[in-house]
Length: 54
Image (cartoon, rainbow, N blue to C red; front, side):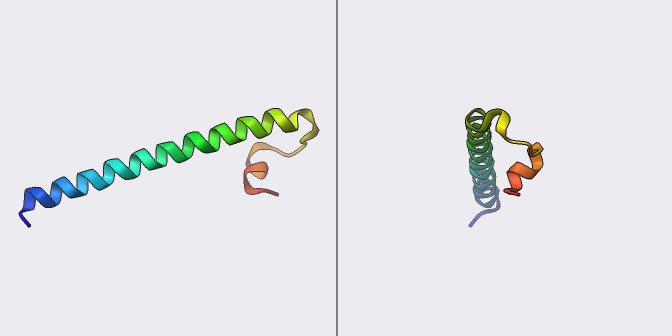
């Protein structure tokens, strides 16, 4: 495989992983917003602890 093709594949993998990561982050943020709305004022846990499920 020529060098430019290897670089192209690497770039494609990088872009795909960035898109997947962005999608995961948006899903997590959506889930956190929904759980925050559902739980409301009954939750006494700070934000990081609720992410960890403590």
